[in-house]
Image 1 (tube, rainbow, N blue to C red):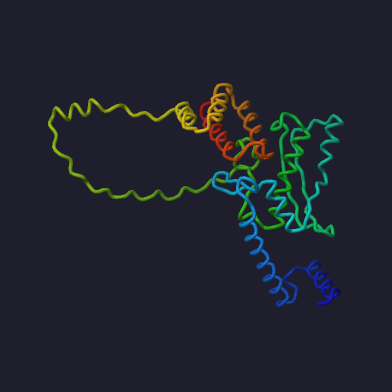
Image 2: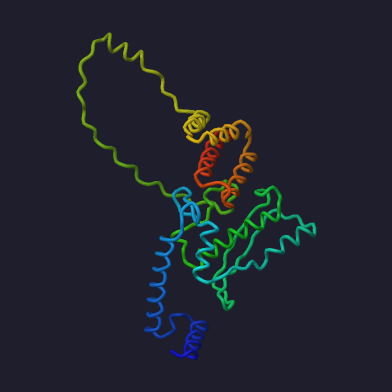
Length: 283
């Protein structure tokens, strides 16, 4: 097919819809893109490394910055941030900024826009540091744009689930309760007969059963840690943190360290578990 005909076909698609082109051409395009997508998914499966390129957050795979960069590199696309500097300039002019929303544009080598992404960040998450807020919002936007351009939303998600509830603007949808599992029918076991005295003693020796308190849960969790350094760190957090705001700031510090690869995923998971346990104690 000549370049002129390809250009004509492209114009037809752009002026109308893909359903207006020749059925054979449409099917051929679908088949080609389906095969390319399969190859892309196989490459992701074989090349992206858990704990480096993506993580598991509450059972869902979350794409991280290194993984997004690898995907864009393989596709030969780049990202730009058209309005990122506006926040820095506005802040320098004395404008009171509390939240940053960044748009990312993905383009091919010819500069043609392929997809967009959006990332948001509040300044209180970064202690009022506008530069850091813009950087973190830009990172989220670039990951969002990567998911869009490669059609990977069914595989990866953004790491919104690990944020505090009041940091997520859109309320979560409630999930319909699932049908409770049917109780298994247990066979009756014949117990040997006991005397009245034995029965009374047995009742007297049964201790009262109490549900563990949040403090007990946290203490048990810390005592079960194998890494002595993490035990010390966990105890420090439990002793020093007395309110939710302090807990949030401390946890966000660890999250940024994880994002910048200064701590490993396993250590961050432990900190997250401690954060969740302490939220039960504080609230």
